[in-house]
Amino acid sequence: MHYVPEQVTEIEQGYEAVLRELDDLTISLVRDSPPLLKVKRAQEYLDHGVCRRLRIIRRCIQNIFSVFPPDRTELLSEDERSDVEISLHAFVINIYGAPDNLAWIYVLEKGIVLTPSRVGLFKKETQEHLPQEVRGYLRSRTINEWHGKYAKDYRDALAHRIPLYVPPWSCTPAQGERYKELEAMISEEMTRCNFDQVQKFSDEQDAIRSVCLTFLHSFSDDRAFPPVYFHSQVIADARTVMEIIRVVRPCLDKALGKQAESQGWVGRVSGLFCWFRSLIKKVSQ
Image: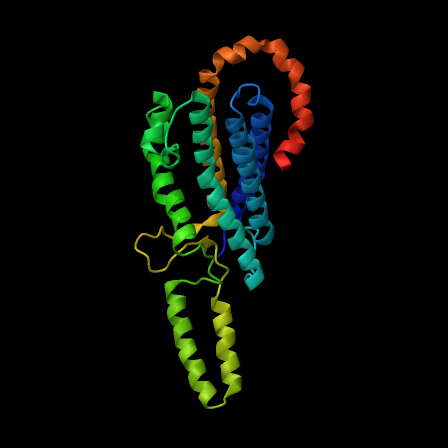
């Protein structure tokens, strides 16, 4: 199975765009948020939680596309397939963790007392303290299902059940039946030491196999999400996380609005150069 040229072009454009968007958002968070945060631990959740996760998410996408560009037709080697799976594992953990880091920033800055297990943007105990527009967004069907039926399912499977898996090859159902027939024929010819026929049938099997464009975590678990086309999915997931950040961020600014106003634009501009000097160091930590 391969992407058609139009799909390849669309995915490649999305790939380049999402890398720029991740860079822009990370720079914006590092540059603009620190003057507003007054709790040291909240600052840590921003710098070493959200921003570090965005950096890792970006690198995971790069790694996946480097090993497996969308126009690739050659089957992955075992090492290449493992590298893609490693990047998918890190990617899923960090898209799941970034919203939790946002929740911690909000809870700490607002002085809200909750047990750690109840802190999370998708936990009702945390949502009770969020502005109505943010609650409405997080409870919308699209975002709630993305988190509950996809991100959480894959994260839980990765941590507790079957880790995410990229099959070595794929084929259509009809091709799969033919592959099984050839397998039986190979076994029979092997018993006869008819190696020319074995080679012929093996070559036909090789022609059936196509590079697999999807990932999954279980073939048998009823709770498992269906196989996902991972090139477009990692782009969509990264954009979803960035959208969540953009929705939640204004409520932090609003909560700390008086502090921001007291600093004034003069103070913000005078400190801007210092924030840019520290940008590279903070993002790369």
